[in-house]
Length: 118
Image 1 (tube, helix red, strand yellow):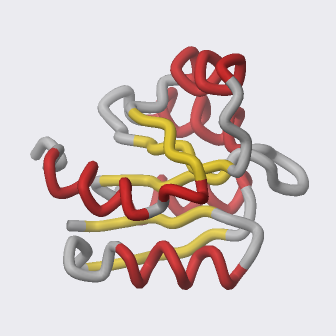
Image 2: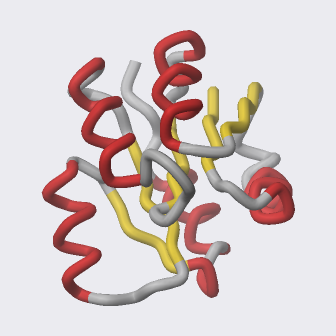
């Protein structure tokens, strides 16, 4: 499985990479939404794990851009904020799931249960 991890904090990217290590054959990281869109286009991951709040282009806009490139893209929003409005915005942007950073182990279960489509 190919995985793109997008977060402006290197430690959070390392943590997510560690949690998902047994799911991913290849992992690419990006620090912001612009890098995420470029990386997605070049790497074509099976899953994109996307932070919401980043400098420059945020996670919602990056998700919209990625899904415009590939409507079948599987983007999981990861954030510290567990607000219903944000969940709705993530869904509207096209994210397939919404995970709070205090529940990162849910990513392991989510990717294990929902394999990427070929």
